[in-house]
Image 1 (spheres, rainbow, N blue to C red):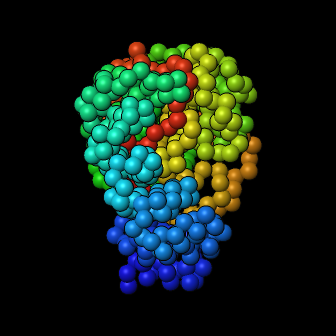
Image 2 (image 1 turned 45 degrees about the horizontal axis):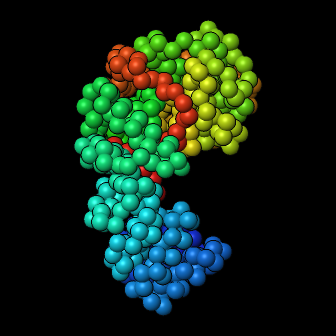
Image 3 (image 1 turned 90 degrees about the vertical axis):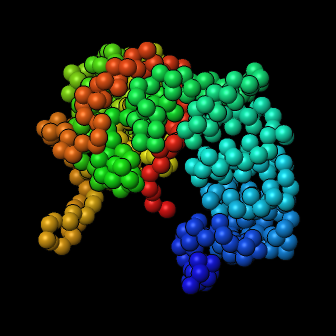
Length: 418
């Protein structure tokens, strides 16, 4: 059975999610008219009239550049950029050099983490590029794909940016400056170094599971634990001692996870804990997971002097609008230690475990009573390795000015769930 037939059968059964998952992998080799016909059905099933209408137009004329562009654009807007890519590629083939199509195609490549392909298509259409944003994006995607020489060459030829691109110019300059200063090699395994280059943040722990292949230091699914929280606390202590910041307090964000993490962190470091207030200087802003909707992320972008944003668990597949100054670990799917979950005892049957509803103070005490999880350590990820890395960053960490968004995954790929 072909993937397109499988997607059609899932749509027949009303399984929209299953059909889209199938099309994510099938789209690249599918004829435009057949793909569009399935997208039209999916759009109607989802109630997305714009997607369905754009797909119907492509079914009528699958070689029309404008219609292919409109359907690709609709796919990007609906979060299915991987399906948009072959449609936009076909659109650009039908209208070579069209900047509108080129811009949308490179955005779709970025969403799919295909930075090298974005570089290639921009270079192939160089004659029609403008410095801002086109050649800036060529330099940026070159960094994200690990080609620092091309990034520096391209950046060096850019004209001064217009006012609305000044922040992007600063972002690119910061990445290139950090790449020149970061200790050790910048290769396809250097997750901690590349994380710092792209985000200006220190990654405190590398997952040892599938380190060489396929995860390279990131987690896919993780059932979090008090021991992992304690490891984040102790490794942050290592970085603070090596790099020099001396915060005077811990600020507690309003969500429950951050309160637990922040109370444990404050007690371990011997610092007072207080509710988070925007603009407070000299404090550690303790975040369990910035993806929690209770976190006021819009107030975290502006750095106060000496303020550190520390996040225990950072999503690398759904990166947020604010990059933390330090991340305990990188995950795709996370179950907090206090959430309802399923236990799998050795040799026994799976059993449900209810949520732990004890107060934040009680759960913080559990973290403090637990030894840090250092049983398995990835290559180059001992506390001593982390201390040496942090000590080499003393002139560049923590960053100052406005916090940028989190960029992921850059030149170090990892396996991920669809």
